[in-house]
Length: 223
Image 1 (cartoon, rainbow, N blue to C red):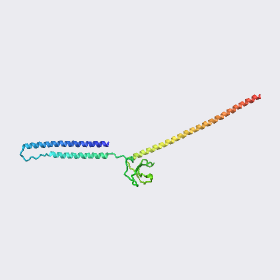
Image 2 (tube, one colour):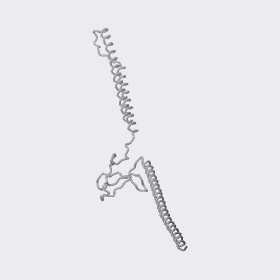
Image 3 (cartoon, one colour):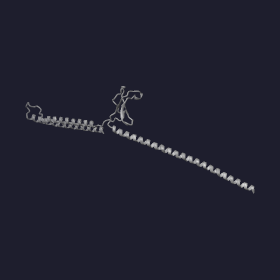
Image 4 (tube, helix red, strand yellow):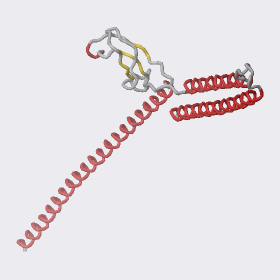
């Protein structure tokens, strides 16, 4: 969008300058034509006169001054528009340390590295530090002052809330799994106890049947 505004401003200023130049050339030609006409008439009236100097009208010099003044004002307005566009131009984003390198140097003499804090006290806040901090580098540290630090802070807080919700959901899911496993285990115990009871009932039925058979045989032998 800013590039389009620059192009339109440049195109407009160039076109206006071209029109002013054409107007100046046309008026100068008309002035020269009038001067030649007056000189021709004067030469016809006084052919033997020594006063044959070219006649310059004050209107020509005044027009030149007016044109120069208008051109100067136009250039000033164009410069003012350029300054306004440059002033209103949005700053470059510095959200990434790789896209916008820093001009700071750590105590090791190396260019620092822009990193993001993940601590609970300053989540999502950017800071400058030594590149070789994991390999025993210096302890250079400086917070990064950003215009959108509040937005980053809000996003970081939302991210922490989402992580906490995810942890709660995972804990609830784990509890549900444990509850289901306990139910299956209780069901297995119930099935095992039921099978034991059925075996006892079957043994009791066999014992009762054997007792009746022995009782019938004993009575038959007695008779």
